[in-house]
Image 1: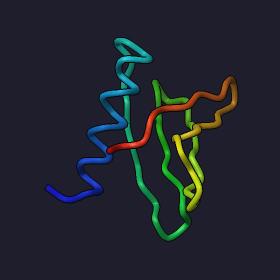
Image 2 (image 1 turned 180 degrees about the vertical axis):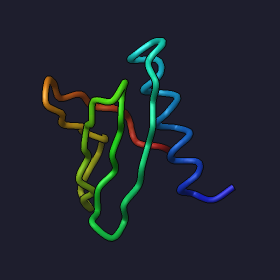
Image 3 (image 1 turned 180 degrees about the horizontal axis):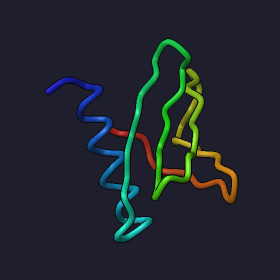
Length: 70
């Protein structure tokens, strides 16, 4: 399993714990340095940066953070 696949699984698991019963979709766009987390059709974005110590997802209705994958 690749690092990208492991990261998607990590984010999906954490998002499912934060949003029980929601439909979760994780999309990694490394060219644009963005990870998109879709929760029941609501889009949250995390802009990848070198000094990040958490994933901070910003969406239309809220901002939340998730721990980085070890």
